[in-house]
Length: 328
Image 1: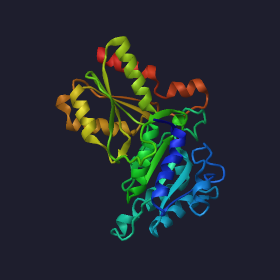
Image 2: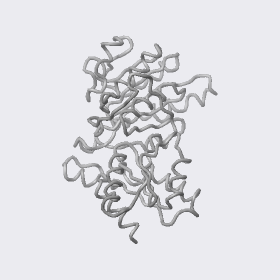
Image 3: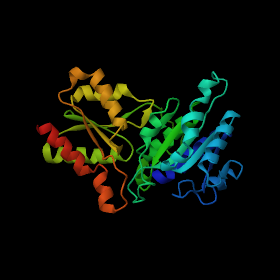
Image 4: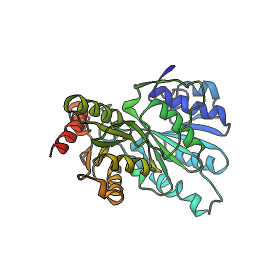
């Protein structure tokens, strides 16, 4: 049994795929000699050398442009955008070029590339370095979108993303880097499946659907509800927004009759709205009450500790919302 932090899982997942396939290369700002600004890529340069692990200029457009060209010519690049907020600087490549070119070439050119980034709040980095932007990527046809909540899923979903022939946006959550997980099969190959949610906890009273850093908070809220109120909640870890595992989400929603989404991104047009829409269309008759979204307000994130904590869904807010809703 090995203990792996989410932070080290990033490098472990990349290294697993680079050892397996010599076409996998890794590039980004400060990812080589410095081991990443969050120390998530330490050791990669030493193992794979400067031809396969490359530091780039401070230019998100250059990073993704190089990755796109590499993918077009037979490599399977992993490119890092340091903060997910910086997708705004290279949005033409993310929205117009990478996801559409395979379709526009009638499949003559494929784009097997992964763009990983640090996403989300919790480290007090302020409005321009703390956003949770999965819903940005989810809205673009042609992109697959992944956001792991555990160290094992960082490794397994990275493997699935690298091996996929379509571009994948891979959101590592910054607030989870220090979290740890015991992994029995760490010395072997770990591969998960894109588009497959996981039920992390079973309960009969309500279904909580969460993503990334909201998964451990939803689990903690579920344990509190069980201990203090006797309310038993199922917790579904979405893991992959595109493709979306609607079968698992709908089955668990229909079984309990109550649906709560727990979302870090701002409320307007969040991924939970799409899930609520699907649930009301597909299992309306099984619902015993209106779905409820627990979200961040539609505001720029503050950097002050107390204000950021107030904005992001907390264990207390999740538990209180579920309890009050079910008591009505």
